[in-house]
Image (cartoon, rainbow, N blue to C red; front, side, top):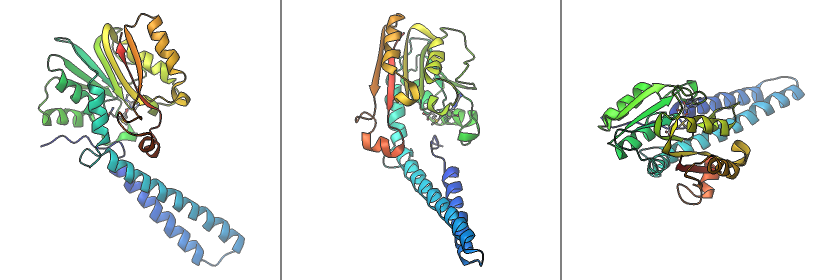
Length: 261
Ligand SMILES: C[S@@+](CC[C@H](N)C(=O)[O-])C[C@H]1O[C@@H](n2cnc3c(N)ncnc32)[C@H](O)[C@@H]1O
């Protein structure tokens, strides 16, 4: 059995959008054929027709993004990002690393493979919005990859259930932008709270100013607090993807925050 990392744009989402397009399209056609007040007909059919177009465009975009992210596809963008992020994670002998929002376990497992001398823990809330991801899936994927130095637990990125300075490394990929109602820099702080002095971090997300605020200032603050290294690396200048591809996929502003506490 090989690992199944699923897809950030699940099949279920594409199917639901496609079904919505068909239903709205059928509704539009039915309204057009029906005898009723012409003004009312125009308004109803116009609304249903617009809904059909919007839903159809979302279906097409989802199918496009699914293809780009697929682990079996030609582009394999998710794999490239996960493996590229894992390159920054180094554990000492017997060290423990944390992957926040591990999803299907891809990044946790990639870090564990690179660090057989240590152990990686993946946590995720495994909520409704990513229903295909689960703790069991992560454990199955770890087994399928022949990796034994991983553990997976339910957890919340907003309040990590670990003491200060517990981990030797922390990582995360495309998680915090999903979390509404909390400042993204506060989420970064919560992840860095559980990192030991001297530990490494590699956090990848859509760190646009609109979402994250002034990240250059954040980096300066880390240095002021005594971090050994902190750097923001844009990943849409060819590192993981081109600017054009990022724009099409809604990933503009993607960047890696890497360094050493
Ligand atoms: C786009 S997926 C990325 C999964 C994984 N990091 C990867 O690279 O494949 C986003 C993940 O963030 C998780 N997530 C969202 N909000 C979370 C929270 N508050 N705490 C923990 N995980 C969360 C979701 O459940 C989902 O698995």
